[in-house]
Amino acid sequence: MRALELSTANFFGNEKRLHQGMRILLRIMYLLLLVIFLPLLLRAADVLPEFSEKYLAAAEKKYGAGAKNRMQAWSRLIAENRNKPEQEKLQLVNNFFNKVPYVSDQKHWGKKDYWATPAEMLASNGADCEDYAIAKYFTLVALGVDNSKLKITYVKAISEAHMVLTYYPQPNAVPLVLDNLIPHIKLASQRPDLKPVYAFNGDGLWLVKSQTLGHVGGSGNIRFWREMQNRMGKEF
Image 1 (tube, helix red, strand yellow):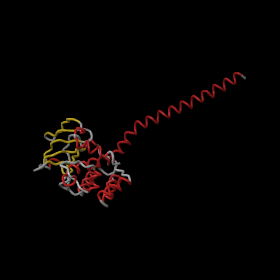
Image 2: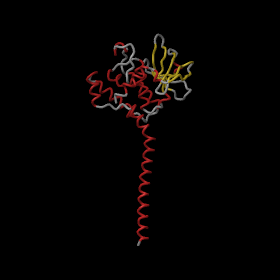
Image 3: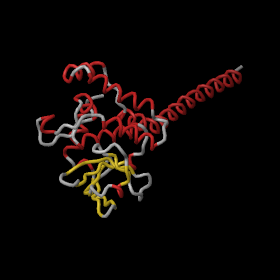
Image 4: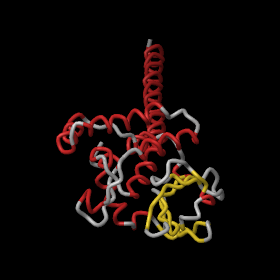
């Protein structure tokens, strides 16, 4: 009888330890999945324009009836085109933002230089050159284009400073230029009117010399870029 009691106790003791072991294993698996997928989910949340009704109502009150429609159209653009080929994404995004009227920062925001977030650009329905490039950059990243392929590029145009978005299909390829001044996307070699000076994205800052990029630091060193990202983080 004593042996039976000990045997039964051992059985239930082993079963209890087995269940405890399974719970620990499941927790470990959960934590591993969290470590793997949470950064991806956070990255998607950082770039997807999902606006609250409160934010849309405030934008509509400040900028007029069209603000909400333009911002929702941006959300649809991203939601409906994630599976398109990259070249088609470039054209769709270029066309979408080039429809926004050009307005100088001084006239639009009362400041000599102001880098608007994509939401500010669409809500207010006005943009300076850097706003087009920034909006196209964030939208293409949200559509799944690799960040390393995209550079916001400061150039010298014929008579003034200008900013465009450049797309590198391969690291050493001649980039394509997405420009608010012209509707067509062209190779940089077909734009002799633009002289690149420096380029940046979310990962870094590069000087451009003879069509080659030399890394010089982080894009966080650019004050207007840093301020714009801080405002953008409060919009969604």
